[in-house]
Length: 347
Picture (tube, one colour):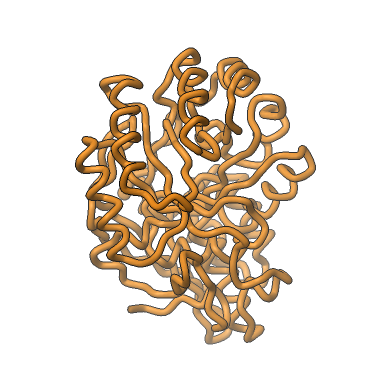
């Protein structure tokens, strides 16, 4: 097979601020796998979490390395190709993009959507959640209004871990819920920005305001802190940065109620499916999340949305210049197309 890749840039309508910093856009890579006269496409995007920084230039070098490693394979040899990339420690974001492209290629050759090939439904049982970053109380209310200009939404995730502490988090949240319809599902993501005591206190405070769950309250990697919060929390705790692949899940049992799967973090759809089944075998809830993907990356993730409990695939909905289209937003739900492969087209 032949592998081609090209860089592109996307800009956010509204910059996103979390406990680790602010992002207004992203430089991503489109990956094309070509074999038997058919092309499949995937996306590799830059992201940064504690212990793993994968920026645009680094990913470009990894794409060169990956191409040299697997170009002799057929596109049918998806498992062998991915195992070779993993054995050579190729960046997870690059492995994810290649895996997406191989699934897209396979669906196109078989003339069926990927979700249908997997025996799944075309949509999740739950609505997509949209994100409101750390900002002033007034700005948070305005951000929800801007989301309402995009479409109808039934779930919202609020970023916390503000530099001013939990008092600042509380002020923003109280202002925001004045603006939210009563039937909108609410969750919170601290991105590791709280200590144990603040996380426990905030779980009580947020539970009184109808929040469904808290994501990554404490510093990633400190399983003891996460476990204590989980034991004493009034709300379910979802691990994100603390859980990258299926190998991490067994050691998180007793530390959380669920995990957040992101294709770029785990290495693609194939590993994401393993994570779903591993999590379920341990009685854990499952979330599908994203970084700064365009529609190409988020539509790939949405192929398995029927398997999970929470959908946080909203980054493409906040882009000024998304170069792709795929899922449609229908009553707050992301619905996959019936086109072969991932169902993504160039806009």
